[in-house]
Image (tube, rainbow, N blue to C red; front, side):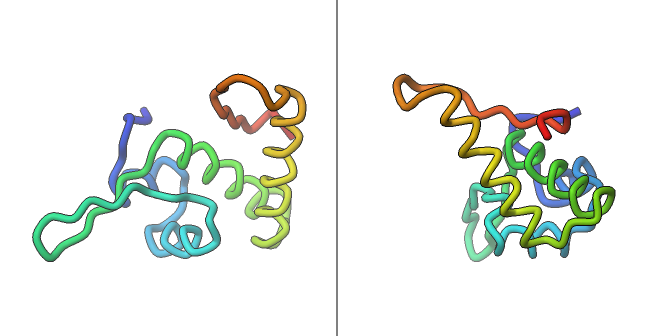
Length: 101
């Protein structure tokens, strides 16, 4: 079950990847965790939206055969398409699902 905010280990498990791959995806902008400082340590907290995006990218890479850059591009195109469908007025919630491709 996806909590509102998940740590790195739980988020990676929810997505179905290892933690190092999750950190790599952070550099690509696939996930963008909130970072919380506690003394000298820094903790990452991933939202449900981050986990859903991660699941989509994992599906595209592992099951559909996309390379990571192409999967990221597809995700961005889908996001742009969804914005166009909603229009530019009003606040709306971003929802990603595996069935949207």
